Image 1: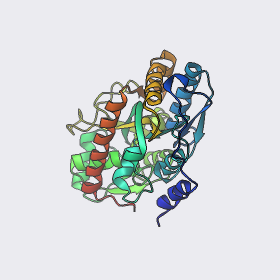
Image 2 (image 1 turned 60 degrees about the vertical axis):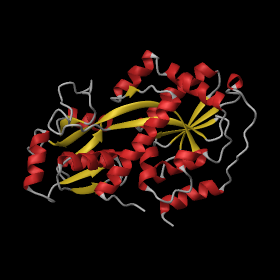
Image 3 (image 1 turned 90 degrees about the horizontal axis):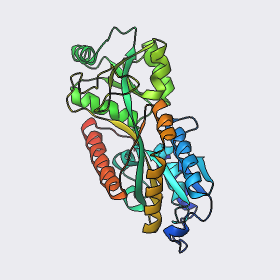
Image 4 (image 1 turned 180 degrees about the vertical axis):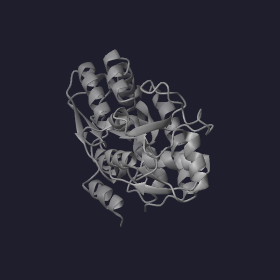
Length: 324
């Protein structure tokens, strides 16, 4: 059994409680709420989780405690939430990995689409296509032309095999029809340092992770991954504007509850998160990460989640990504 499945299976084996107390939305929350985040301390996911937790604790009049449970592509945190009661007092905050894992792992010890309720998205942020300033590459067109002239010779990084940064890079490679070699790293900071040093040719970095090296003049931003330009780099074109039509990729974060959580509680959580996301101070916290709030109903988020799973499945198949 692979490490991903072992780790998640051990958590599930601790015992999933299927009974939930008879609680209505009006009584919720009746005790402290735990937000289990799959992001490590100091990551974008962690910072976003803590910002939302602070606002919700005021709205709910209960402590909202963030727990970091990192590993197995989000499986550690997801599996832990499934061991708790389905009463809304233990919730999951995960990134796009929640959708990617469905496409990537054929033998998960749980069914992501059936065992979780898609409650609400929280935020999204662009990635930036970066290269070291010593490479001589000054635009997306330069990068594509160089890759086509040297098929299989350029390399690109990611913050981990099968993660969102890997998927954004594979989507770019497929859209640009180029042949390059994937180099996975253990963190965004490691990939950025090697890009700055020229040890990898390019990669798509979370915008917050690349910012200091861009400001230091060691990384050059070639394009922004989303359909709209970033307020942090307003003069940098989107990748689509720069010559790869239709390219659009966001790193997004959402909130999930264990299946069986009463509809009235799910509705209250969704509505209260939407209220929290309207706070101007929260917007400013997100802005420093290059992020912006996302707002959808639970039904809209469920449809979005399935579309993301379908897109991830396409990329897995076309790029022949294998991790199991």
